Figure 1: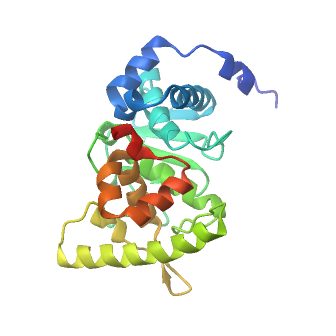
Figure 2: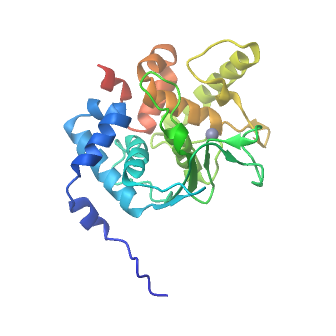
Figure 3: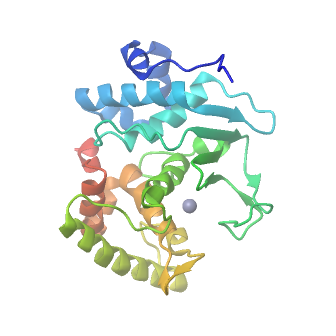
Length: 258
Ligand SMILES: [Zn+2]
């Protein structure tokens, strides 16, 4: 069937100037934006333009998806792409937005034990987000819903959403397995005893086991949130984890706070 709403080719999207109102949205809602180098800002602008133009945006529960919402969400996703050349997260091209938490009980495999969830990264590449929770991201915080859900999309690049990642360097690959195991066990211990840690206890959650190994997808998503929202505190208390995430995303997020 002929597609009447055929999307613009990417080179035309990239050639477009970055709209001034979009810059204001990013200043207001993505704190990292003001800290980026000139090159990083150019890269972020390109990623935002591509994501806004190419994603199939849909409002569920009657919410109207306006440009400011698209730019906010694309801005957070683009932070994760800053160090990754020519990567525009092409595999996640459907974003559904609800006003608040949504009912996940009808899903075949709920990821939370509660009745409602604030976000969901689906294995088919779609993402559902509660707009109310998208706005909760802040500097020094430990939560960023968009970054959390898109960390799951990075995680499923090896066709498994379980915390295993593909590193370019085999030494990093080996280190990730070791450090993730240590950090995950430590977090499980903190969660069990109620001890505070910079990593949210939610990261100790595990729904599935693969061949006897605990599924660590929530651990990776929680660690990624921390890497982008509180890089200084993560580096101070979990430097090996910080260094591995910096190599995975090819980005030294702590520099934003220097
Ligand atoms: Zn999650």
